[in-house]
Length: 164
Image (tube, rainbow, N blue to C red; front, side, top):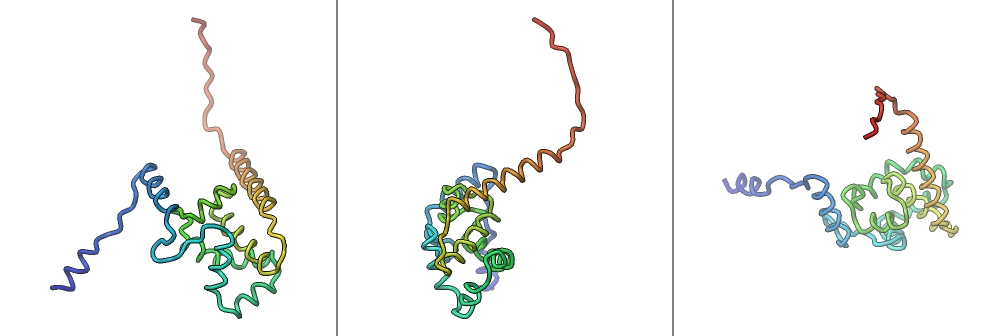
């Protein structure tokens, strides 16, 4: 009986409702240094330190020695997925807010930016943060234009305007 009561008392997760609920949750999350017991970096330097601390040495060597383009693509759904889930990219976190302040708003771009920047950091290469951010802004605008160009007009109606 005790077991059934304790499992029942845990209840279901409460999800925010509506845009205001999600915004309120986001505002709470960006102030937290930990979400679900996981440390959330506040900036790139802390992200690099966390990735260094959490990654096995052998993996870091492979990561560092691989070409940037391959790393960015291959690790998007591995390391990138981990970063997105544990650093709370969807519901927001202080790291997400940091990236948004830089000008990166798409979660996939946030993942790519973090992986590429970490790779450059491990190789002692210039991070070129501003150039990366500008490239993601261009990609976002190109995608927006592509979606706008693909939309289809269903019906157009013209009415005369009466002078009144």
